[in-house]
Length: 199
Image (cartoon, rainbow, N blue to C red; front, side):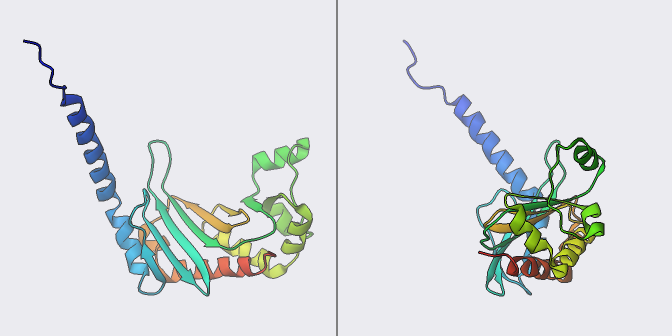
């Protein structure tokens, strides 16, 4: 007699793997969620329930923010992303100057926004979809000083997408980088950067 019952073993294996991976990710992110939960006491926010990376969403001075702790991957370090949501009429990216960017400029393949502050232009590389608007924005010394402070805090780039400003830090340390005073200060810097953005 031929057995017409479906072989459920492969389905069992797949289900077991999915449950194991889900539990493993949840458990490994427990400390990160706890670190974010401690911030709720001073920030008006909540932990996202369905997110691959532990995320705190909230609001500060009328602007929505998000703090995301991206776990390390197989070939990538952990990242701390802090975002403030604000519309703007242009986009930009800021990085610290390095050997490759200097070489690119000498070869004429890197075209950056020049702020007019020689020391700032020597330290930072700015790209924008609207260089004229970006030049006006970065002509403000308070903006340039805030950018320096963000990088001095260990963040390695600033990205304004037209919808939000995001800063990213590699190899964050929960005890230091999720300190209440540190995160509140960083959000205040992002608010300063966002308030000068033109809609």
